[in-house]
Image (tube, rainbow, N blue to C red):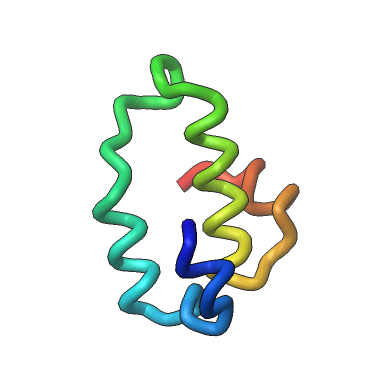
Amino acid sequence: MRLYYDAPHQVTTEAFYNKVEKSFDWIGAEREDIFVMSFYAWLKAKMQSRPLYEVTLRVD
């Protein structure tokens, strides 16, 4: 996402988090593209300032 590179401090805001959550339409882990899931985990880790590995393994 371009915003992450232009203004990295904004990715931790609630408004950005809500925008990202609305951007993804999940179809279930069994049918979802692994690359989409990986990108989302990376982005979520950045938004929450948590380790990528921890976010990737967590099932919400």
